[in-house]
Image 1: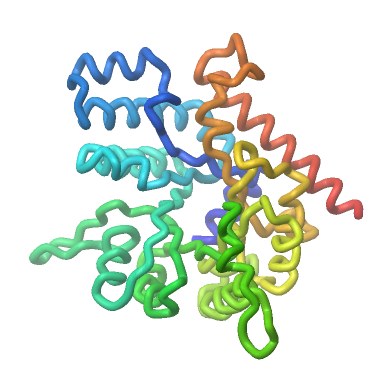
Image 2: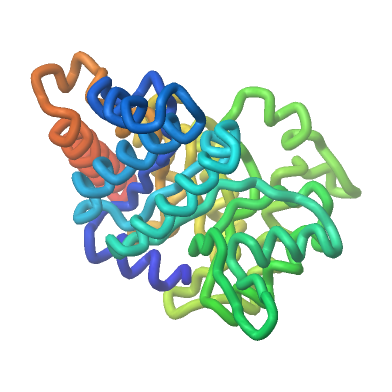
Length: 311
């Protein structure tokens, strides 16, 4: 799966992943009005507006980007209708030829971890039939419970060409309370220890570009740590949050890439899906503002990577 993602990044010359994290206040009024007229002010109405919103975004930018990252919590809060919108969003994005990264951040052990793996990247067996359920291409996972929470996903990755990104050094300010703790005999930061484990776990899953289907989440808000992790995790592809709304710039995340410009994919959620509300794109339609935000991010990343290569 990582090879397919990298192929798409290179083909579109754009390491941008759009975070499909819909909120009612980000959805244009006409989309909400149409959904609520059909279903009333119900969970179904909200979910319908989410799906209309997501499809409009995908229609506007799918030719520009390699991947999308729907955050499942934004859908779960609207119950079963929300999860149905999540499932349909995944399906529609895959129809558009995009890699779908399910931002689920699951972490559990034994049969529970296996159930998560089946539901998100495997197939559920009913009688003699197998059904892919959410069927994302890749998922985010939390490694706090150790290898027992990660390993149940491996057979499904091999069987169905799937992948994962494991939390390593996250973009949020409070992450350092745990991730920066010095541990072990060598007194290394915990995020470094976790990163080394991710590199080792991914060894059997390396593709043609040398990267593994087992990737790491590395926040752009900590550029020095990102540069450090890039050096010590040569075969681990990074999913990089924190750009834009969380304050990180393209220059902050340049260290997450190799000298050849490969090695990471950068997420933007509100900066793209909420672009139509930004004064920067005033006068543009929802679709045009969304598309222009992607083009602006693509150019911003390209300039930062070019500067990084020259150093």
